[in-house]
Length: 298
Image 1 (spheres, rainbow, N blue to C red):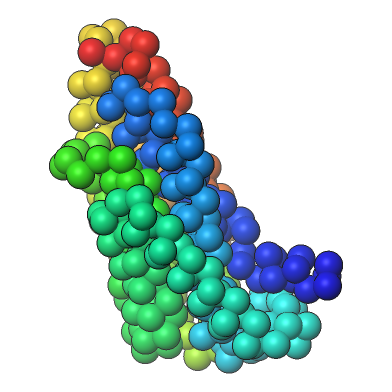
Image 2: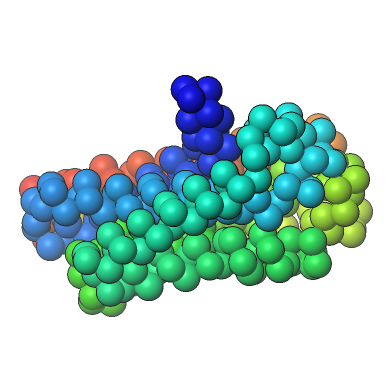
């Protein structure tokens, strides 16, 4: 029983959903900070259903990806493709978590429910079931799901339009193909063996890196714009610091891309790691600066 629970949790890809949960928490912290609200119970309630929804979506996605995972060296030893877990456990267990998420979200906020529901649908149906094995642009179609937890967290506490929240969402949306395609370049043979038409499978490494150029530039621009808009919540000197942090963060991402472009065979995984570090720092500072708003914000 213990091993089954551990296998189920591992099957939900904690490294993926914990990161997405952090973005949702960052959205919560930002919303509560600008509202000057200390809603601790609400905070943990929303974090709980975001986590359950992410776990459920990953579980159902793994069920749909089973035929792929059995063929890829990188994934064939996971619980489902290796046979340690029955496919029905992933499908029904994940579905139960998703239903629980939607019920909990419905009691909190209509907008939070909408973003959780559409995010789960995009990831499990649009990306995993429909587009993953049909088009090289699958990750573009699935990128919305990466930003949905952030919006679910933010709009669990407010229904007002907020440019910073939208820019945070766009950062994740644009960052996603840069992150996934850099990994796909490294494992393009693995994806090809499983008949998954990721961009680097259909195009040469050089062509794929060129496609990543406008994406990297867009990611930098949205990052800098996020810092520019976020600074308005602070006094002049602190606002300048906030802007500087996101300016430097955007520049560092662009430098990482340009280095990988010059030598993709040696540096592509360094770009992949850099995208992880970039998005982690991005949202850690969102949370830190947000926590300062009630004390030194304008």
